[in-house]
Image (cartoon, one colour):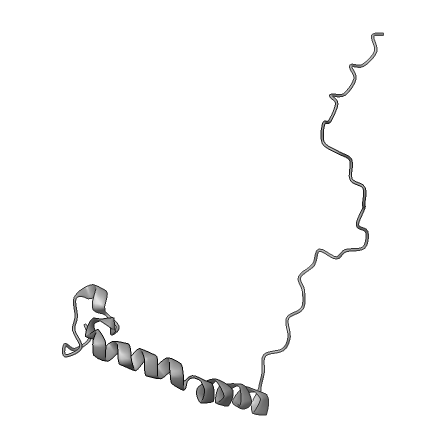
Length: 81
């Protein structure tokens, strides 16, 4: 019986480290905030968003076409379609 051909030589380097015990399952997400925690998060966002709202309002005055629906050709004085 002829000898089996030798497997092709792999030119890639061999791994020098093997990781064992790493779980591949989904990572648990933290619980959704409720009650007072949810209200505190909302208050912080509202309290710290004034500069963003002011900037947006300023841009709306400068460029009225920034309003929602500008891609459909509507203007600020037209009613929503």
